[in-house]
Image (cartoon, rainbow, N blue to C red; front, side, top):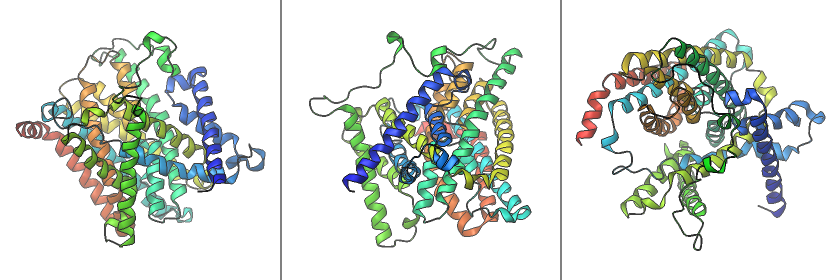
Length: 465
């Protein structure tokens, strides 16, 4: 890369930084943004989109085409360290994700999350098939439909996963698919918060909540998204290294990027030698597998305590913020508008099915805190983990209920499994079409419900080992 290209990249990040700061300001200043808990990256990304040339052409801010292209490519790159960081720091013993902490409720939370994801996949497939039959002039691209689940249950960051995966398969529509995923994610996070807050208000008035007796106001600082009171500001993370040697953040980032580098080497070797099966595995899948190995080695040699989960999460958060802002600011709006009818159909049906299925499964299979568990899962399956956390906090301000632990561990398993299943799902659709994939997703849904039903036996079996 030449000096001019590096300078261009610096300009791209500088403008994205301005958008993030504008998003931070507007999150704190605009009441609607505070109530919806819209991330600054989403707000800033839309500022870049609405003010730039993507929509207005020469009438907008004249961002160079090279910047727009760079922004479109950034999510697919930045999402790799985000995904790679997931296994880092996991401890399968002691105080980590051990058998002793594996309860029936954790298994059930995992099962409900997977069931809702599978149902969203089925919605996307059915809507795709309907419009391909009823409106063939729309010319839906072959992989259309997965964006609902990836946007709703994966959030804006998953748009980069989709873009990276499709681009790696040399699919010409990767940028449009990335934009459609970003669109469904935006509908998901906004609609999920509106539906969730409305449901909490109704449930509180009817006495269906375990702790909340009446709808309470969300703390102002939480709504604004920043904390001015020094006594309430939380630590960024533990310093596991001395900065005289290496900064703790640099240490964590180095491990993550080394894992990403090894993943690229393995992927390129598979492609160079044309190894069947391995050629189709996306880079982020390689990175998460490599990091499992790296984490295992570190734990084996007693180096696990050098990893601080907060620090790791902050690094992933930085990458996600820039990836989300870049994905939204570069959305190919005109191309996406061609598919607005199937997108809206997926979203509306997705709202109804996600809420209905979540609440039904929670009421049916949980013995306690059914509503609170449902709100955490609803937030996650229409936004991201933090959306579920926000809805849970409204119901359970001090996290007195046992929901948070079950939800956190169940989500960790779900996020890893979804990354594994995505390439399988997409390849099935591209190679075998609608019928087999419909059966596959229906099978996942049935398997998830069976997992919920037999959660007690499964948790006892794991604990016994």
